[in-house]
Length: 242
Image 1: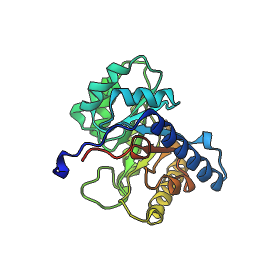
Image 2: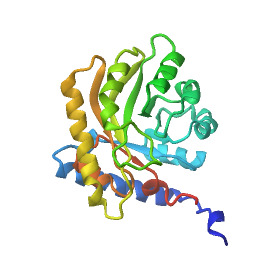
Image 3: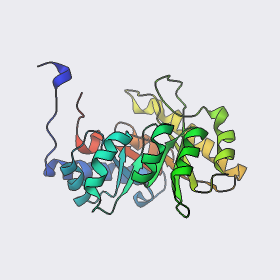
């Protein structure tokens, strides 16, 4: 069988329960090492390619935050799950031409990186609605990754502070993949330091309450470095399709 045609079977309910138990135990241990409670860290289950049934099973296991990478895939799933009391996060790059749809689908956008997309998002929101957003910062220098460069972060935040329907709650980053998770620690530390600098700048309407960093292979390190939100897919739902 060709590798490109390989499709792993969905994990069973018992496997899902076991996976979530391991994840929560690791989160608790990492939180304890950083002098925090596990309850202070939000688990966002990333549902790229995950079936509707598996999302419902994760909900039954207590997951309340879910993340999608693409607006188009989310548009096919979220309406089928409207009976669930959950928060949907957009964690992939937001294109400005998808902002209107994203505003209708998601309760949080964790990957904002341009004023153009932000303005489109703001315009799509009805008067009186406040949308929590995180700014994605590009720390790894990889051309394939989205996010704003650190030098442009403060100017962007100054512009975002003028958009009354967007509530900037913190920062997000996606560091380079490293086989040894310890090698990504400096990136997580850098994001924490950036957040402290932003907080000291006191931009109106901008708070540094959330640090979204850490994925299935490195979330322990991210929590040790101050993550308040981790984005996990494989650790919960198993290996993704190729």
